[in-house]
Image (cartoon, rainbow, N blue to C red):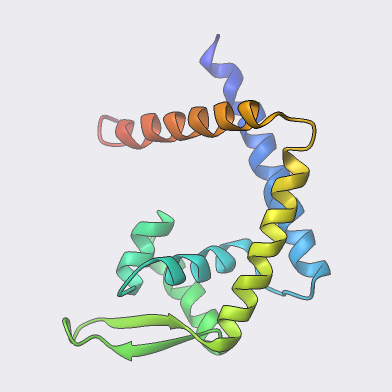
Length: 146
């Protein structure tokens, strides 16, 4: 297969997923961009989460993460605590409101996932997941070679 043929379908899939999630979140009354939802998820999944660890989790630049965190703080979806291991950083934690929003968003993600895989066998989904992970690993490994 010609690798150049991968770019358009991958872009279309990513755009379709993000657009659908954006609409689903908005329809459910969650007025957050998907990036902010990913940040909530990263904070929930990362033990002793800091802005730096969230930057690594989201593979994003520090300035964008700072903007997202400021938005989440302003919306009272996260709280910051002193980091006892490093006085230069703060630990991030979901507030009870942030936990509720994340739980709701995860339910929407599950529904979108079911829609995305409608008509696919579990074997087809497994092959897609393995292939997507392998492509991601190839690209992440290639970042250092480029």
